[in-house]
Image 1 (cartoon, rainbow, N blue to C red):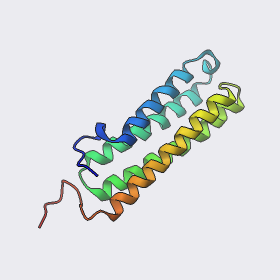
Image 2: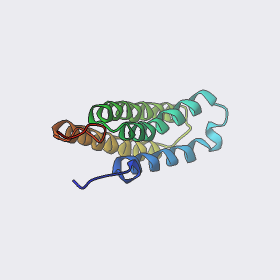
Image 3: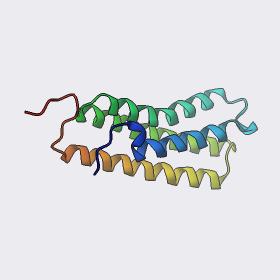
Image 4: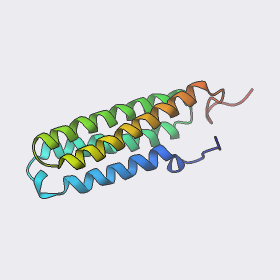
Length: 131
């Protein structure tokens, strides 16, 4: 794996940003217009995926990064659950649900892979000096 110096270069962050944007486009449709609670929840959880990847990376240590990736993965699950609620309330189509669900599951898998890589790595992070 090549050295990554910015969280923006991480594939998992890029994918989470794209999914957040897609979800935001959907929730701005007329179907969601009066369900402010669900709008706020799904905006928050989908944004939390990318935000926690960024925050964990910027902490400069693998333990912190791994912890924030775990939170990010949880937010991906939360977003999936909220998409089911949106579908059950007829705010999104079954095709939209299937597509976003599939991509969120793929993202969760990639986050898990990153967590495994970090756990196995001897590199501890930029905040720790090599001895």
